Length: 356
Image (cartoon, rainbow, N blue to C red; front, side, top):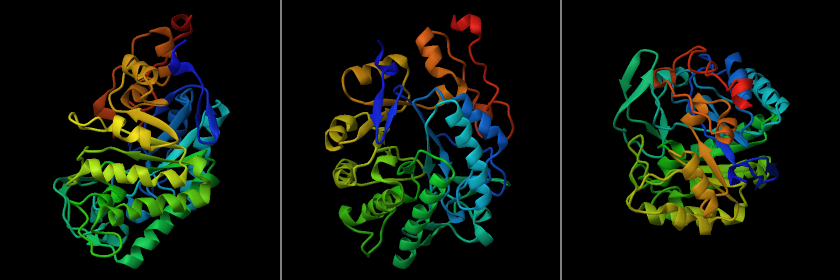
């Protein structure tokens, strides 16, 4: 039997298969960060995954980085997410919420009262933000004070509580893609001189303290972490990524996290060989996988489960298609972040005849 279709233990849950749906920004929420009814259908369609991880969800209004992205900071947002989790659970699925604070990768037009985005240091990123007025240059963010860092960590704690209230099976910290946790972790974006800056032990403190806060709310077996060494997205750079990520993952051991999702971008360094032996929970890998490469990763022990992004986006019945050897739908990139149902909930599933 294909290992993709065998059960796997991830934290407190025995998942029926080793398919994980990756967190993917889809920008279908309203201007208040309230998830749309379309999202109920979207996630329920994909509930055959062993585990769904939602798109990035801002824990507090200051964490919003893109237009039409959802939050978990208000009662209205919680109530909208309850419909999503109920629909996934009705189909026998499991779903974690990814908590994502964009930090400096935002714009005043998306911030409360038009304020500056926050960051570990006042360093302007290269590039542009997607706003309702089109693309606009990033601005120089405001550096968080030491006291404010504690408040942001508390935001993650409360967001975890609200995610559980909304019916989620667990939460994932987005520690990649140049967003706030990685901004603290990376030497190029963190020039602080307090306990959250300087040597790697200090730069990793924000991510580790945030994970501890999330674990205190949810239990370690319902918390995961995503990292992407050397992705360098959103103008993120670290002077010694191998040292940085080795240290970070070694510090995760006492936390007992449910899983670590690693999607590295280096062609020179085998980060899976470097990091997997240092992590005791379920090890998830992603990044451009197809059926053959996923099977190979499971067969040679490089992963416990495999993460699929655009393949799940365009194929709500991806496990069934793999099982049948059926062709895959092609993702329509023009609709990835566009409002409405097109390219969101209208990708066709296999017909009864095709399944037979």
